[in-house]
Image 1 (cartoon, rainbow, N blue to C red):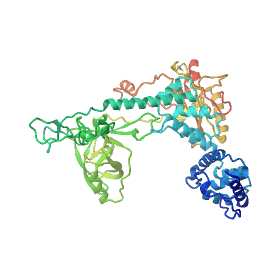
Image 2: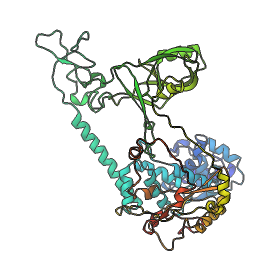
Image 3: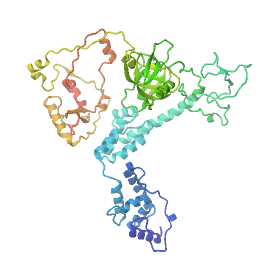
Length: 590
């Protein structure tokens, strides 16, 4: 930048403090085309991120000043107000105490665009961040890094490391980070290695699964008969009819103009058999979608880390067996529907739904994330949506139920819950009726008051936890407890110490879990521990549901005993207590 250009910018900045100074009287002006191109700042683009965008814009603008070798404060201010753009200048014109130097202008803008944030809310948002299904580890790290700036963490790197371990979608990375003591950089390097390996392995699998293209002549029948089922093809006999050169993978002209690499089906998954290298229309596997949709079962994912629509998973089976049908009224429309005691959802086809909506325009179809599969396939049926309506049986019994609407032809199904509620299904089983008898409970409590005070330990029995020694202990950082709750938390902890439920730990402990205080509607507090990481080191001894059911076979009389704070009545063995250590607001090392 020449001397004259510097003088002009300085004069503009000092005369009006904006980039709109057009009254300079000097004759040596620098045309706008002489300035280095640089995008202006748009304060109205996204007000939720305006502070972050402003900080980023200033950092890049100062890099521009360095490249221009411009260090004079007055000239830098003029360039700032020139480059920042008209919208930002309009805001600058009404700001108080804008000063005369470059730094004063920057501070004034920053004070306006970057409001003082709520640290507690920022920490809450940080804890909620988890890796997206299509997000790489580096992208997830950058999101955490950006959010951590607003949290004022004592150790930002440690917090980001803990969050990655908790919220990464890769269980292999989580297990290794829990098993070994790894720094944040080591975790990122290992995670990136896993991603590269997965990507390379996927490419190799796709290449190996792609069928080799051959000059095989195939014939498409003009009309279906017993020889042609679904999308099958049959090799042409020497004396057969008209021939056509067709690619058996994509259906296009064979051979392809640019060779096998140009086949549209190359590397694409088949929606029917899930193999790579051909379209579903030309799939040579046995079609598994034939038959009427009948049996519906509901399955749900038990993995708390999973975050996708697949956690609502449904299975639809086909069967040629006969099943009872009945006529019900859905809304104002009478519908013949199949009663299926094995179905956990209700299913209608689209023509029936259109008739229901025509008779009652208050019924609206809503978007659904449910997935329904025909038996033996992994391709979900096309759903138009879901809706809720009143269903009435012939006897006059009615209830409000949810219905899923299939896009294509299917049977109308009434699931078990709706069928039983309407009295259409009666199960021939022994009914167990709960028996409650009042044995003058109040009299017993008054007679033995000491037995019902506080929390007592179960005598003569200790609980020993089986801990996997190969798992590396993790000492987690303390969770921040609101100041308004600290007094109640400390009081609750003191009561638990006096009752012998917890004890203070002297010195360092290898395991450390954060304490979480949950307020109750009654005004009391519930103290819980985030034990997800220590749980990975525990060898489970709790019996499965099937094991319990086997022991209960033939039983008809059951007694329910509800222990008040039952877990707190069990004494932990001395060698098992270290894994349950937790930090408190009054002494983080306790």
